[in-house]
Length: 131
Image 1 (cartoon, rainbow, N blue to C red):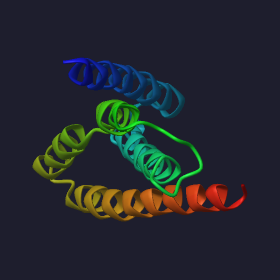
Image 2: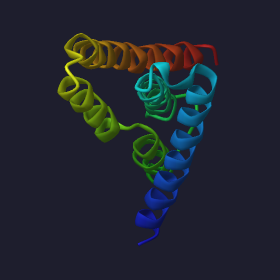
Image 3: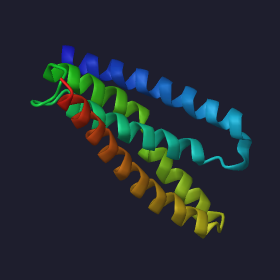
Image 4: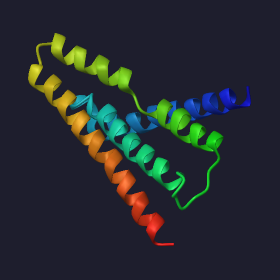
């Protein structure tokens, strides 16, 4: 039961971070590009999960228990990233006839998030090697 509480707590923290970060981006950019905040959240979340996964893995520099890894990756990163919001934004763009933006949202998000998770992994491997 404690594990479920940890994941729920992490999810709540991640959701609050997503809301705050997305709101800060919207305040900075205005509503001219409403989907950009979600894309940036997903990219930064992908980077973080790659970083955490590698830093706290068996060969990682930081020891983390299985529960800590679940709290960070499933809880915080899971609550922070927003695939459902991404999907809704893409659908809205497509329904509004903005097919080019919908396509950029899909392709850009997949490519940038995969790149970000890889960069997080590479950064953590570099950090692990500098013991």
